[in-house]
Length: 114
Image (cartoon, rainbow, N blue to C red; front, side):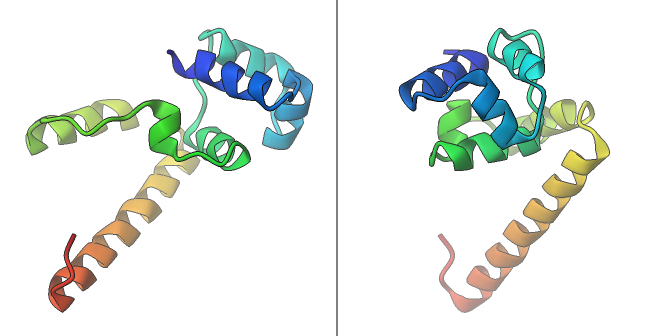
């Protein structure tokens, strides 16, 4: 299921109209329609809010599964994807990855690494 189809499915299951969801996301209904029909891509911020509204993880929303991909390939995927993001989404990703790194280093130093 594409991301647009998944958003439409979640919206319909919860009985929320496009107009209502668009208002909650602070976006135009037409833009939400374009996202649902795969004519536009949602920003990271919109994806984060959709996950919050429907009480699901972003991984679940994006249908991300752990894969056996090398770290170099993962970095290439990230690099290829992030170059298209607007500055505010890049800033968000920088904050998230910084927090994750700090938490990882803290856990590693405390011997509680996961």
